[in-house]
Length: 260
Image 1: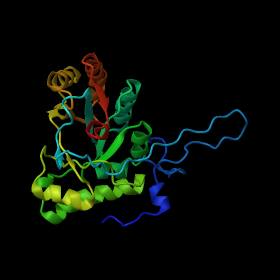
Image 2 (image 1 turned 30 degrees about the horizontal axis):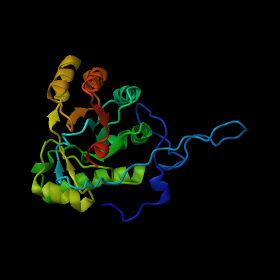
Image 3 (image 1 turned 90 degrees about the horizontal axis):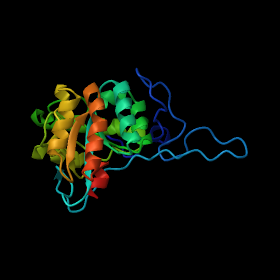
Image 4 (image 1 turned 45 degrees about the horizontal axis):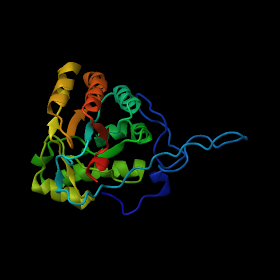
C-alpha cells in the first residue's frame, strides 16, 4: 500500500544511466535537483537540472476516461506500454529525442523492479511516466482486491523511484476500464484513466512499414496512439511516423501537454 509520505532517500532513488540487465546504484540527486558532478573550476557551467516527475494530471473539462485530446489542435500523444528490452527502449527514446518529440511511457511495475534506471532515463529525455499495473494482468477480470493491488503496487514503485505515482494510469489488457477499475484508480490517486483512440497493433510485430501505415492512416489531431517499447519494428517505424506527422503539421507531445 502507498505510504502517506516517502523518505527523502526514496524520493531520490532514481538510478543514473541504464544498465541493460539491472540498475545497481542509487542516484545522488532526486528528480528536480542538479544532476552530474559539481563544478570544480572557473569557466564550467552549472549542471543541467534533472526533470522532475509530474504528479497525476488533472485535466479540466476532460472525462474520467480519456481517449483523445482536442481535435482542433495540432498535437498528438504517442503513448508506450513500458516493458521489454531496455536497449530497444533506449533506442526508441533516442529516436524521439532526435526528432524533438516527447512521449508518454506507461510502465509495468515488475519491469521497473528489473530496470529501475529506466525511470530516470525516461524523465531525463523530457518524457512523462505513468502506471500500467504491476504485472500486466487482465485487470478488468480481477476481483477488487487484486485489481487494487495491481494499481497500487505499481504506483508505489513509481513513488519510490521518482517521488510521485506518475502522471497517468492505463489499465492492462484492455482498451476501456470497467467502473470498478476507474474507481480503484481514483482511490490510488489518479483523477483519470488513460485510454487511446488509435492502436498501432505494433505488439503483433507486423514490421515497421505496417506500423507506420497503421498510425499515419488513422491518426487525427488530438489522437492518443497506443504503441509498445521492446519491439524492434516500433523503433524502426518511429522516425517515419514522426516525419509523417510533421508533414501534416502535427507534433508529438506528452499526454499532459495534449489535454491541458
